[in-house]
Length: 191
Image (cartoon, rainbow, N blue to C red; front, side, top):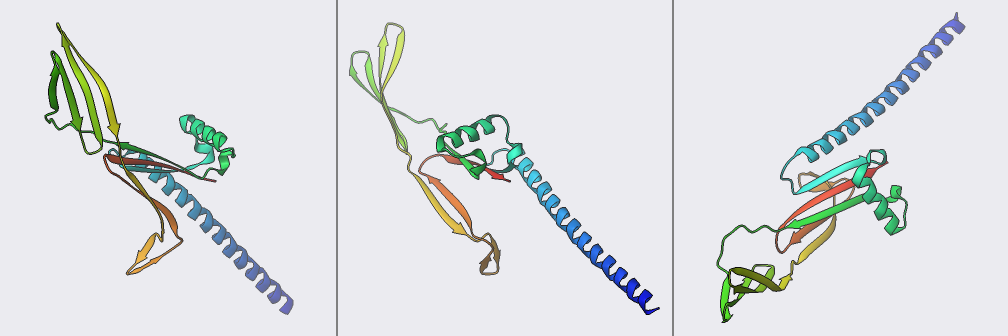
């Protein structure tokens, strides 16, 4: 009788241990799948939102297709590394659009010829306007564009509780152009 009780108790303990291990394995799989779903939802939100100044996409290597795949391959070739070793690509576009109507400096220096010049915060534009019979021609002879861009790279802990920052430090880059607006597109590749 004692042998039967011992056998049953070992069987029950083994069954409970196997059940606990199975539940832990399934919980880990569910956690991975939830993070994958969250990643895909975030990518869709980033792609479908208009007027964003920053787009961050997290992609798997097998999800890269089309123009992005060509860009990754050509970048890897120019860096002389394999494409799987590229972790992140960041594209930054700085646009400056001025629709304000303003008076432009014009001075006549010859018969039917005028000097025209326009300046802005980051540019100087000069040219000569010529009027002959019924034809007006503009020849630009100077264009200077200087946009000072400040890149600040720093590490910061991503989570904050009260006055304390915690978590693994993450690299950030802050871009401050002298003129225009910054639009940043980040592609992060995971395995």
